[in-house]
Image (cartoon, rainbow, N blue to C red; front, top):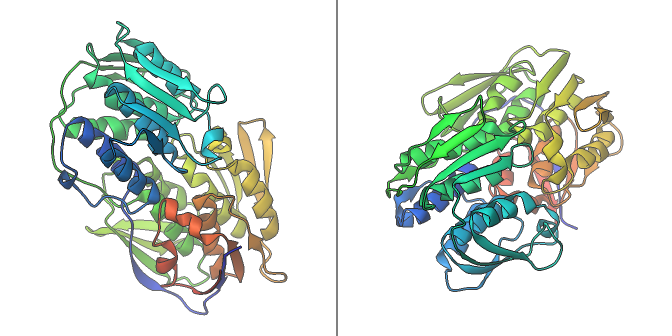
Length: 415
């Protein structure tokens, strides 16, 4: 088992962090650019994340009948729709965990549009066999909004190429809405027009063609969240970080970290080239709805636990079907810090509370093959020695994370 051991520092920090590019923007841009028939050179600042590099590899490998997405959920969902609309014959597969992540809602939607998709093993889960597309004759489609916004984004990106476009009705509450808005905004930059009525949950996209265009990917707000944690947990009031490449008006839902972290003790100031993070006074209790930004829940839970802030979380239902069951993972690992995550109302309300343990046995954090578990707990190293198991999981979204951590913390690794 590989691990990294982090040691607290004895003084403040003032550093500049060159953030990675957005995986979310990159993966959408790659699919849209491919549907537009554009050259990959049209896209600049693509993410170094393994998920994005997997997408690039598979899009370039049109001849191979097997598309192995590894552990990349976005890549699995987007490519399933892409291969369906382009008439490809592909077997979609991935890691053991990927084949435990449900995809039935997307497959049902694609089948209703005319895609030939079969399950090779368990109904509703990968591996999938995609075998062509014959339009079913209806542009009207209904899809649940409360499971994964990526299903909706996958459908939206292929919809202009349908013979009659699509009238997509989203039923129930829409989780991670900013990611659907990101998809529509990026489609618009490649020439696609859409009519959206959020009050009715209706998105209407006529049949039309994408236009190849240059697109520059923004830095990653999800990756930025861990540096917000570093500032929040630093015991020195003059600690600060400048995060490069972030836009003041962002398409990314995780830009919500600016608002969430303010009551947790971090002020954000736009510098023109990114954001300067400085410390400010924190509250003692906070309630936050993570429906639109579920990937921030782990980060915020750890900060609250360490700062002894009582945190009430809602909108985190999707965490149970991510890279791991993130609710269970948080419950297990927060205990090692002297905190607990309690389910107050089934699948609706959770509370983090406790008393941070700053001394004693060094906590060893398990990461569950989940990149966000490793990065969410790393900032604890500012206050006490801590061990993170399997640190290489960060390659999924932020391969240079530990290199950047070295700017703030001393560390040792054990392979």
